[in-house]
Image (cartoon, rainbow, N blue to C red):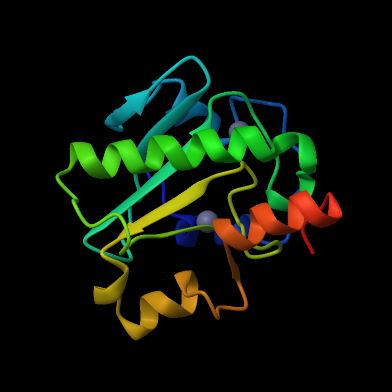
Length: 161
Ligand SMILES: [Zn+2]
Ligand SMILES: [Zn+2]
């Protein structure tokens, strides 16, 4: 099953909340209904590989229950996002990534988050990412917000702009 967003371009721009978990690809994967290998899972979150890696390590951490894209978040989601980061770090450690300072984590900004289920991109090593990859996952990318910026915005303005 394709997990990459680029295969989902038909959905681009459609970031409405989808509660129908039989249609949302990340709901299906996060609840182990596909062949996708789940690298880490708890009652709340699941982590699996991005099908089109933008770095040597590229994982996605998603809530198992459907949550919409990052524009649907507010201050109350700060602990959830922090738990997603924590799972991302622990999967990197499980994969023997020791340099946790050389990691990029963040979210796609709508309408570029073509899978409309909240997912944290976890990439490492950030210093080895190609220019192409930086277009999609760079701190300056128009399409991407780092988790640090997202948390700052949620805490200070209660939304993501
Ligand atoms: Zn979903
Ligand atoms: Zn994304």
